[in-house]
Length: 230
Image (cartoon, rainbow, N blue to C red; front, side, top):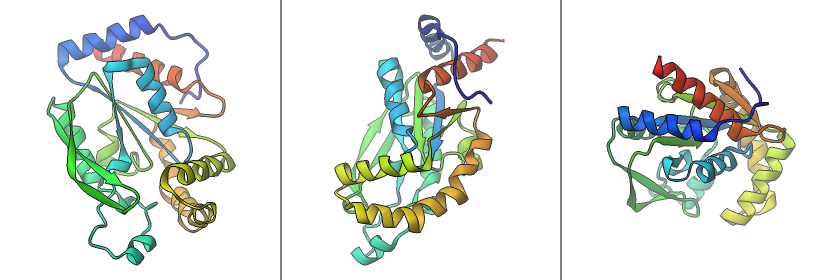
């Protein structure tokens, strides 16, 4: 399983291959990016979005957290959001199957401030490349088999914690103390139990501190598209 890329990827050739696959088969390429909290999943997904432009759609596993609107505030605060059961992976799998067959889905919209889904949904159409990023993408066998390319991203535990603190304080209104407490009580134990083992199911690994993740993904795409053309 390759860790990094030392070669320059022919972007023009890659884009042509992606477009050819889409035009001939009308079937998107599905990329799954999994890894621990703060490992760099979203950063890699956004870098791919910037490079591929209109060819790519990014879906976040976070949109599929189960709605907690029927729970009290105290019950919501005690819920373990770092366990796979907190995410409706079956709905995510269903939506990815629909996208793979060319159908439009209604993606849920999750509100982290209330731990609930909004009443409205977002219509999403398939694109030549669909990037899905999330903690538990490789945990469920049925879900992980949907991906044409599986990438496991990683970084040192200290770096992942610092990134999580920065994100949750800035974007989710959390205190540093609450983020650290959650990390100790649930994030790290759940990472060790459910997430770190996902690397064994990946086609390639990216260390977001040292590797060019976009190049690694593009090399994986080229290899997959070559197999499809044989």
